Length: 336
Image 1 (cartoon, rainbow, N blue to C red):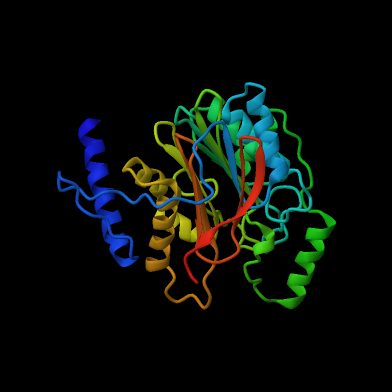
Image 2: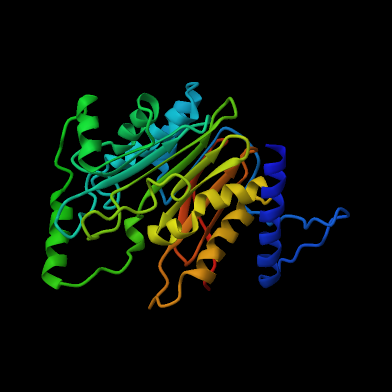
């Protein structure tokens, strides 16, 4: 383990050094000859736990998660309870009930959860279940598997007492019918807040995360994005920190973005620097041929409760509950 971690540290620090030379954030060599890691900080970041952070403006969700922590709950219980607030919100058109459907008019759901032990559970292409995050939690806790999909995930949910419900609201149905009439692919709508990813550190200092979504609006049936993929949409290492992503999932999957952020932090990078590097990887390697840049954003926390947030384009916001403050903040972004 010691040799492996030294290898990872040297590899990622070398990658950090190359990227910083291109972004006017060069690092100098230490006496040992090993480059110093990036440590640029988020001006809103302070150390301190417990803490809850989520993608997009979701103050009721972070408040619910902090309530669980305050009542001596585990971080994994907090993130599950927090994102369930959004899954049940019919006004959020990209998560759970009220989510915009795929091209066939069906709402399909993806979710994953990861606890402080490194255990994880995930569901993909799940239909007619109000709280996919809770199904993912049961996959984690009560099966030898990490991921269940489609009909198998639905059968598992029903075997655990979940009832089927119609997730297509009148509002989402009307939006879908308009899209059919227009016969055009919709542009990415930042107001849809695609995905809620949530990270938390509880009173015992343990870290967990959750991510849940109804995916891209009017996607091809069967499409699964990054949100339920461990290492892409979410990754937690209780010794280091955690990260989660939002935005165009295909780009996050191609870079295993959340895993990358945590590994950069393992190598000594601050949460902010790690988020920035993950976004730059996408910007430099995967935007060629796109008529306009999509949105991708990352949030991260380290073991001390410090946080980072960064996105490809303007408009990404996130919510953080730390101390007595539960507030929404604007993220810095790469493409000016």
